[in-house]
Length: 284
Image (cartoon, rainbow, N blue to C red):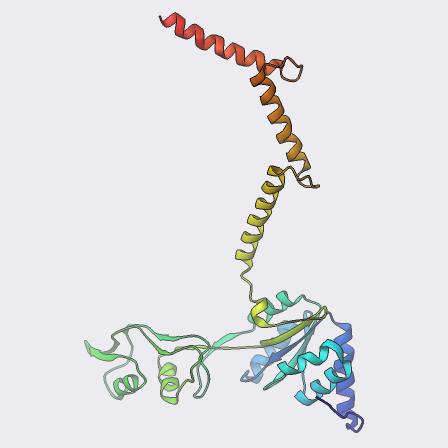
């Protein structure tokens, strides 16, 4: 994209220069979607990020200007500028930043026209509703509602909106009445730029506990392979020498080699065999 920046008004020029300055000062620059976040929640997010990151609300066109002027890999970030985009500058690594942003999310009621982030499920069981028009509203929204013992009851658990589908007004109204809040509202990471690499959300969504378990398993397997293959490293050389010594000693005992390091073991073995033989002979 070719952008002409020479005739920008002063305040826009200042904003572009600030973005460029922070992009060079901070280790990570990321693009986040702030669409649909209430003003009060956004202020709370700013407070939570204080000391960890800088959230900058600005115009998409000015972000594009700044990235174009920075050039190089920064220009590749332009494809992630969409909707209501804001910038976050931080010295956290991208994985820590992703976890921080996930913590900003809260559950909110769905609005008509929004996209279901996951399958939206209505569970079976009694409700607090008395018989009336609500039964028809539930049924029209695809919820299997019946009247039971003077109360409205949901007969079966059902997925009423599949992940990725649009939430209709009827469904949104029913979810609100059932107090089901399926929407995650918070800063949604679009991309993070760190050490000349662009990280997408899917690359950063790592289960820390599972990762630690996998890392520990890989470490044990690598250690055992190194010892078994007698491939010495700083970490495994002691274990390799210890194993070699034990195998050499056992060989010396089995072969009856009278050497000072195995004599005690040979004598102990002979003593055990003699006692066993005595027990057998004595028994007869």
